[in-house]
Image (cartoon, rainbow, N blue to C red; front, side, top):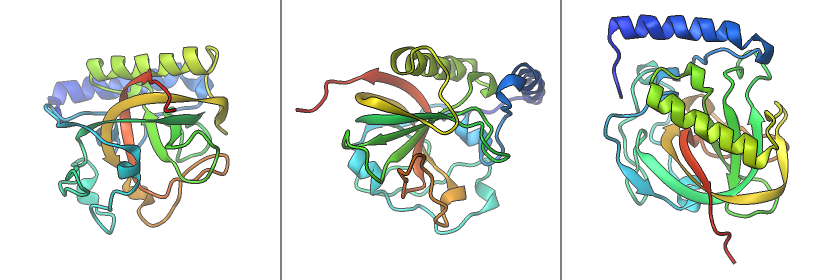
Length: 220
């Protein structure tokens, strides 16, 4: 993970405070749980292409929450490709819902919460992938990537509008290729299932932050 000098950390904190003031209309503010992991990348991460089915079936790397992982990535490898948190993964799937995380005291970080599936049908079970609010990301290069992804989603999927907190269910799901950091959401380890509009995610694994998205040829 990229490290900041004391000065950079101070500047970043000041920037976050200022940006919080500028985003009062959205009621959003920087997150807390494993926030430095969610909004950063390793210096030289592995990059792997992983089928969505494999991501959905990944075992948990740990069996309980531990504060030592608040700012350190979980080092244990799992699954057929021996995947580790912090690696960059690319997967292709149907995108069915986009929501803005601005709906409670614990989910107000402004992330784009996205639900993807192996099928275009609206059914239970999905993988959650998320895109941070760029102004809450310290690394300018990563912030720019997050901004590009969010702009793509707004312009190409939501007619230029922000998604709602309940979740915008796409009338016509789109097939996309998504790239980003493999992240394990420890806060959902004990069965606190995520998912909006009746579609649940049964794995704490997600892609967060998403760094790239593009349309892909739909399977026949």
